[in-house]
Image 1 (cartoon, rainbow, N blue to C red):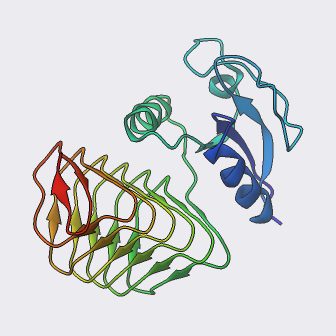
Image 2: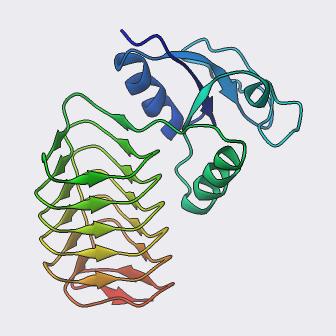
Length: 207
């Protein structure tokens, strides 16, 4: 067991999955931060206030943090706030994930159950790799990317910052996806996608 207390930022939806893995990994969750106390509290965590207030307890004591927010822009902004306070954002990897010995995982990232990250892949900071997704050899993922359950990135795929790849999407080897792209669930990408686009279908089309 780890002798370490963390504060969970956000406490709904995706945060429940994060909280469960954090506890399984031996951390103690001191409590959570959100705009207000939540109605649904499956892990019976104390409410510690809102992280954007100067008197937030997390800034006053020696805690590290985990971020339970799925939305990429918000997650990246909160990460910047935490780092500006000189605090650590923990990297959380589920025990069933397979991470190659020569893959690189950025700080603050969350890697869920049954994820595969293969040889020489590089994953940025504050990335979410959700249940059962596959990141093949030599892929490069920018900061604050979110790969949804079951998505497959074939070898040498590049994903720009804050891009979202939907559940069961497939991206062909060697494809380059820009920043702030949204790829719909089940989409098949066979060509490069520029920044800021929304893509759906098989083959993927920009909408």
